[in-house]
Amino acid sequence: MHAVLPRPHRDDLKIAVVGLAGGLALWGFGLGMSSGRLFDGNWLLVPLVAMAGLELLRRTRPWFAVGAGTLVLAADQCTQGSLATVLMYTDLVYAAVLYGSPAAARRIPVGSGLLTVAATLGAVAGLRRPEALLIGVAVGLVTFAPAATGVLVRNHRDTAAAERLRAEQTALLAEMDRTQAVTAERARMARELHDMVANHLSAIAIHSTAALSLDDQDTTRTALRTIRENSVDGLAEMRRLIGILRDAGEDAEPVAAPTLAGLGALVEQSRTNGLDVGLTVSGALTGLPAPIELAAYRIVQESLTNALKHAAPGGRVEVIVARDDERIEVRVDSPYAAVDAPRAPGSGAGLVGMRERAGLLGGSFDAGPAGTGTWRVRATLPLEGATEWTE
Image (tube, rainbow, N blue to C red; front, side, top):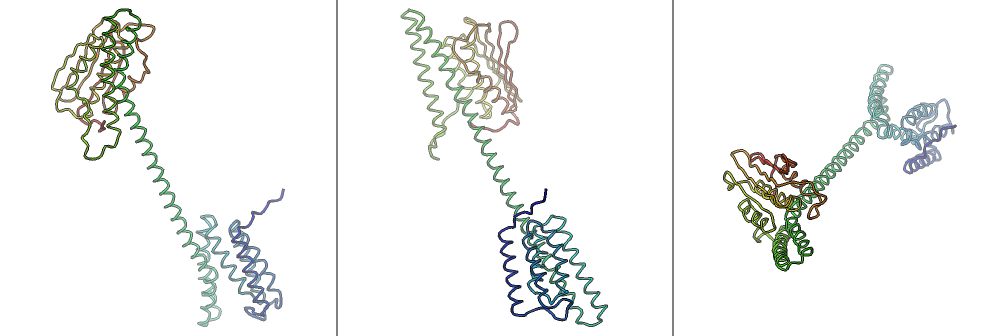
């Protein structure tokens, strides 16, 4: 199989056509660079056409083009010579540095510089006349000047490409940060929504089931009263969450987050829903960081919700909150018995949300059987070095 030459670039084709046309115009007017060479007459057209053909490869095969162009330029010096041929050769040197490999971009300027110095010294030593310096200048203009120009343009192009890549990477990192922030915010709002509504909806599901299954007017009235209370409380919690999400303006009052001071009301509500709950608090629960206080409250709330759905009927649920100088510990023990299904459906997101809350604050969380017939939820939240997050 024969190798197929790459298709020349459109701009390279234009340069070749313009160079060839300029050389033909100079030839038509009889303008050669010198006379009395080895091949006079129309022989200058041969290197002219060859150099124009090499211009087609200036971008796709730059190293070959400049190498072959050097031989063509040497052949041109054996004829009357054409200025167009010389100018096209300088363009090949420039293109070899600009479009060639990094090695070519380093070697061509060095080689052309050494060639210029050698030509200058050789001319001065051979002719021993000041005019010999012009030979070195001419060689430098034909070889070193276009190579140096190519180096400058290539460095500028590489710098621009590096800056463009850096800008793209910066934009990508910013987009990744934004995506992570949105994901974290969605996860936080999902935890809040689950913890606020699950307790009330679980109570509604359990008491509505009781009202439908028992044909007793007093039981039905009690269940409906409990359903109404949980519906109203759940609606208030939803309105609070919507108030957080809505941009109400800078002058709007902030919506208060639940605190550990409301544990008594939370326990009392659980008792209304049918749980036998005891609350034990040790240590001062005031002056806590807001994220710590909110996380502890939500963990107790979700634990009571799970106890309402899963705990064995008739058992006592113990809520213990203890604080010392370094941490606050939340523990909820509930009676546990293997049953076929919970009294209210659950998604399993509660344990995940509690574990996430504790992890975000640098704390620990575990939940599982603790002895015979007891399910224990235990979270420890450090008071120092907690990750800052807001509701």
